[in-house]
Image 1 (cartoon, rainbow, N blue to C red):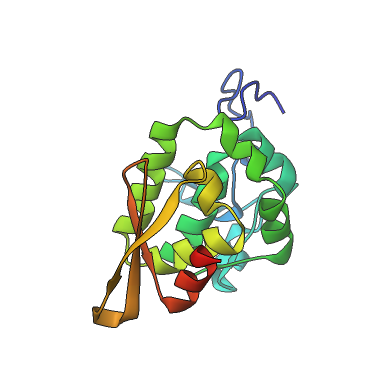
Image 2 (image 1 turned 30 degrees about the horizontal axis):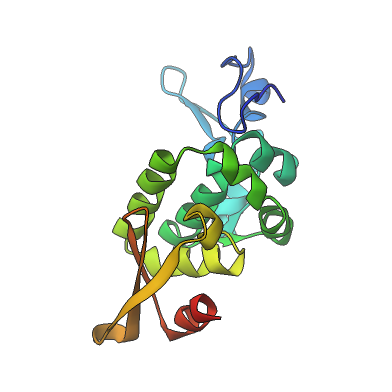
Length: 178
């Protein structure tokens, strides 16, 4: 796959064709192409039908996509929550078994991605997905603490030693406590 450090490709090589370029994308919704000069739309990975079905799916083998770049695990939660998509079962299963890929992602990059996740309206859902996939503690290097219950909307707040704060409903709070 050309990724030497579980985060960065050895070289960025754009495909000579849209089909070739699309195979290096993470999710099908990120493999949509428009040629504005010719007004031609191309969807070689089936991203548009996935979006219409409200489905988030990896391009190719999801396990390989996550091994290539562990940050894609966090992007899975962000995209699913922000775009109101349901990750397909194969993508979820691969993500569940790919937590080790987060080791190749710098703490600063993890913090940046999680800050983006929690700044979006879908933050609670993204947090729930990360917990469901057992990725939250891995992303936070095992240091997750529930810090306060937020009365409005029944949310619970969490903080980590990495300095970011997340939130979720009481169902999420139970998963973090257990």
